[in-house]
Image (cartoon, rainbow, N blue to C red; front, side, top):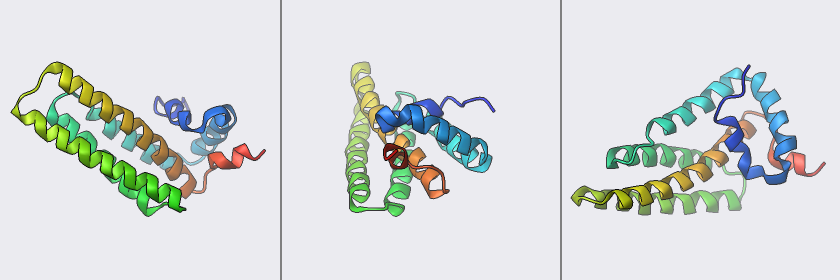
Length: 147
C-alpha cells in the first residue's frame, strides 16, 4: 500500500515524535483500510474546495465546520473542547469575510483570505486525522512521547 499524499502533512502536529509516530500510524492504517479510506475521503473533499472563488471557500468552510463539530463531540478533555470552540469562532469570522467578497474584491484580497482558510484548514485537518485514528483505536501521538 503506497503512502497517500494526505498522510505526511498530517504528521506536522506531532513535532519531533513524527519520525516515531508516523510509522506506527502507517502500520495501523495499513491494517485498517476502512479507517484509511474514511480519512482519505475527508481529505479529498477538502481538496476539491480549494479554489479562490467565494463558492469554493464556502465549501471549504462547510467541510471544516463538520470536522470541528466532530472534534468537539469527540473531545476527551477541556483543552480539546476549547480548541474546537476557538476554531468554530474562526470559521464564523472567515465565513463573514467570504460573504464580504460578494460585492467584488481584488485578487489579492481573495488570495489573502484563501491563505487564512488554508492555514486553519491544515490545523483542523491535522487534529481531525489524529482524532479519527485515536477514536478507531489507533495509536495516539501522546503515547509515543512517553517512550
